[in-house]
Length: 275
Image (cartoon, rainbow, N blue to C red; front, top):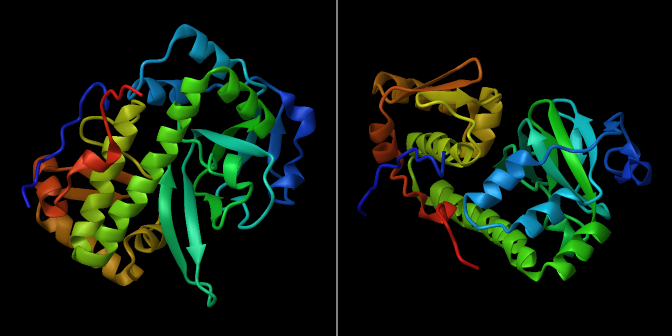
């Protein structure tokens, strides 16, 4: 397979009264009575699609609410009925599945600008859990509002559908990564993918980015034990490719890391798409 090292491009670079914190978690998630900031979401959409002024105004004009979750707090429970969708405006969230014995596999990482449960707009419930990996701020929108806007602006229906298709592409890629790539290449893949995804919304610097995960989190993403994960991190550091320390990824050799991962970012569908 020809490996193309990835580049960090400029482009890649309320109804609050109707929502109760107990609806999602039965816990103390904070509901904030203010208009939501969805700028990163708009930036993410514009990185792949042209948005007319009318389409952007329609998205901004929906009845957004805001909520806040603390680290490790449950955001969406598997199987619960959903009446709203959540847009991550700051922080990191984890999409997780569990075995009957309680072993966790992290299926996807959500970053600011991601609609973390847009699938629930159609499915009405999710078959997995979403938890806060850090303190998270969320913009919420009722499904009735999504229905209204997507029926009025039919192209936005395709734009939002495209976002769920990217999620599906990421899941397929990680089936390959977990099934066929060697251990340290999985870790390298994670660091390369996160750099490319965060560049879309302008979050990373040229030499690295913050990733507020512990080694257990990374192990559950890469499908290995924390001990094995620690060994892989040491190998990547000793090869002068990348370091991970105190929640910070620092690149030592970007192109070399991409070669180690055999990272080809086509599955992220970066660049403009006419739909």
